Length: 96
Image (cartoon, rainbow, N blue to C red; front, side):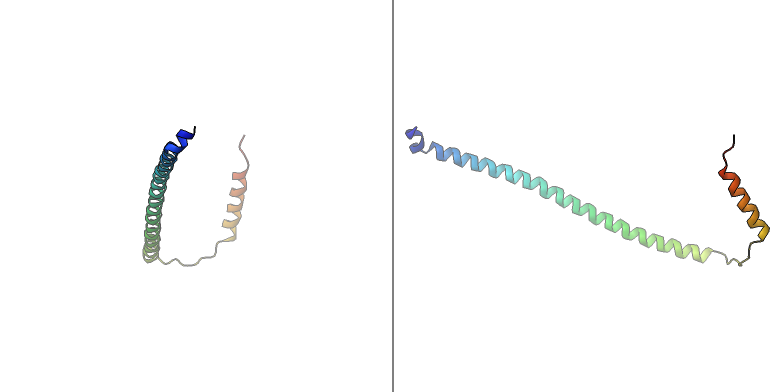
């Protein structure tokens, strides 16, 4: 046993184990870094899509408001309101 320790075989095994751990650590770091950079790219793309959708919604609102004809405010008749309420109640009752 003393020959094994004195010959440096133990030092060589320790060096090999350290190198193996370093290699595994570098491989893990590579994949974690790669996943992180892809996630950052996806976040940037989603933020740009959100910004474009907000612009499109604003444009659609302006277009709808520009094309919308002006409506005259008319008060609903009492009879129409009463009929609507009766229809709503009938819709709630299940038919058998």
